Image 1 (cartoon, one colour):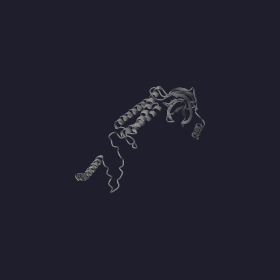
Image 2 (cartoon, one colour):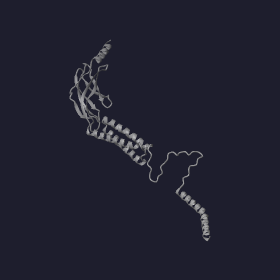
Image 3 (spheres, rainbow, N blue to C red):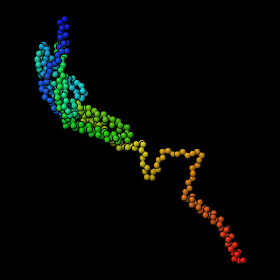
Image 4 (cartoon, rainbow, N blue to C red):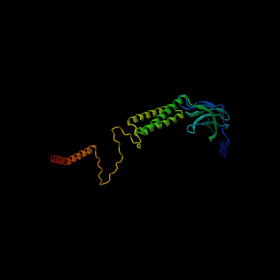
Length: 286
């Protein structure tokens, strides 16, 4: 019976009581998103916590908010508060917002655990952080922007050139650009920088391949006819069956026909000319 009463008391305490926890300093924080050597910037936040148990220590744990995944991550154990005491515990709140500027309210969840039955009570707090991009972030952002611009420029060339290995490299470069952006957000600056550089190198390798294979004109455009080149006829009209195409006379054939006609006329006129001469002589002698 005694154990049942203890159990019911613990359940009622867990349901009815919220963890007594307040910020020691509510001043807004400010700083870059990422640290110089990588990793998200964090702020140490002091919280005064009251242990509701007069006999047991209060074990304090917490979860910090990950802005990139929009979820909470386990932060682990922070401190132990002595029975019946109020003590200050230090929490780390992270700005996982690489490449972004803004002012956000960043929450974190606190869990207090005590007693034989490990009764848990909770509290959510939040602090204001003014975060901005550092010089290290801006360098990586510039590399990513350059890789994106190179990708767009070379892809336009690739669209008219059929180089399969180039397509594979472009796809790899595109994935690396997106991964570089993801790594930047969580402040893995060295990884993001390396990915952006690798993407740019792959894109330039594709451009070299395109220089070798040459650009192909679209299929719906007829190439211009060069000098001393006969245009290509796509279709040849069919000739009607049993019909001979008309013969076209050349200049030489016309000249030959005229010569033949003149010769025939001269041959026909010679006898008549001789007859006229004989008749003329007869008239004179008479």
